[in-house]
Length: 490
Image 1 (cartoon, rainbow, N blue to C red):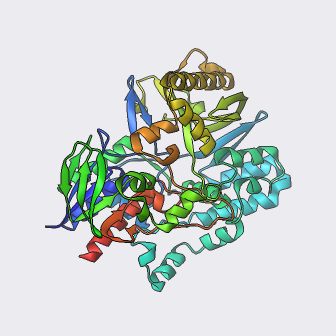
Image 2: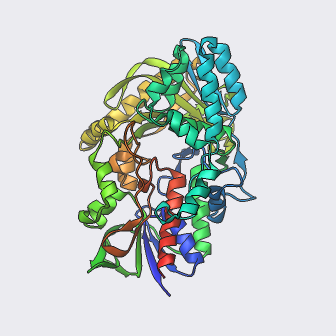
Image 3: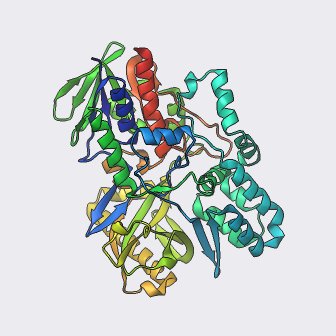
C-alpha cells in the first residue's frame, strides 16, 4: 500500500487525507499544535467560546461542487444545522445607520431612502451583487488540469460573473465608494474591506450571503474542524499532534519522507505540504523549489499585500439583541497597530447560545492590520513585557469606545482575550500573521499556483496560499487537488 505523509492538520491537510484514505492510500497527518484545524479554530476562556474563523461559510447552498465537497469531508450534512445570517454588516456614521441585509431588495430600499441622488449607482450595485451570487469555486480538479470543455462548463455555471468582472474587476474599494455621493454609503463600503481591495471581492462576499450560500454551521469553527478530523479518522487516517516537522527528506528528485523536530524519521511515498507556503520553502524545503508564481507574489508586496487582525473578545453580562450581527461605528481616534483609526467593529455571537454562559453573551472586535501594522507588533514581540502591555492597553482603549457607543454596556463588559498577528505566526507559522492569502491589488494579475513542485516528483502543495484570496474554500479545494494529483500519478 502506498503511503503519504501530510505536514499540517488544517483544512487543506485533513481534506487531502480524507480523499487519499478513501482511495486506499495510507496517510498520516503531522500537526505541531495539540489539535487539528489550523486557523479554523476556536478556544475556551472562562466558560466562553471564542471563534477565530467562520464569519460565513461559502458553499452552504445546495447544488454546487463546493457544497458537495463540504458534505464529503463532514463539514455539512443533514444533521448539521445552519444559522442563516440576517445581515452582512451595518455601518454607523454621524448618527445614521446603513445595513447590508441578507435580503438584497431590503438593502436596495434602504439605500434609495437614504440617498435618492445615488439611485443609478445603487441599482447598478444591487443588480451586480445579484449577478455575483453565481460565483463558483472550482473544486472538481486543478485549473491547470482543465481542458477547454472544463472551462466552458465552469464559465456557463457562473456566466454572470464575467459581467461583474468587466464592471468592477479593475477598481478598488475606494473607487467603488467614490461612485456614490452620500458620505455614509462611501463610509460603509470602505468600512468592511481595506480601501485597496479589488471592488469585485466586496460584491462576491455580499452576494454569497444574499444568495443563501454563506450561512454558518452551528458550533462554529472548532466544531467544523472536529467534524473533518472525525471523518478523516473514520477512514483510517492516523493523526500525530504536537509533532512539528523539521524538514522534508530529499534524495535526487524525490522525497523519502520527513524528519520530525524530535529527530524521528518517517518514510513515505508522497509528502503533502499542507501549510503556509512561506514556511514550506523557508524551512521544510530548499527555497530554490518555490514556484515562480509564488516567488513573484512574495516579492511584489504592493501588488499582492496581505492582512491580519488585532482582535479582542469581550464577555458581556446580559443578552442584547440590538447587538446582533457585525456592526461598524465611528469612534474616538485611537491607535491600533501602527495606525490611528476612527472606526471599529463589534460582532455578536448570540446565534450560538452555547458560546456563553446562560444570560451572557460574547462580542468580538477585529481591527484589520496591514503589513506595516504587522511589523509594529513583530518589533514589540521581542520584548514580551512591552508587547503584552501594549496589547492590553489597546484592548482597553477599544473597550472604552464600545462602552461609549453602547452606554448600556457600561459596567457589563470586560476583556476576555486579546490576540495580534503574532498569534498566527506562533501557532500557524503564518506569513506576516495573515489568516488569508494574498490580496490582488488593482492592476495586478490574479495568480493561481499549481500544487506541484518543479524538480520534485512526489511532493505536493496543499494550501490556501495557492489561490487568492485564500480562505476555507480554497484550502479545502487545494487539499482535494493534492490528493487528485497523487491518485492521477498512480
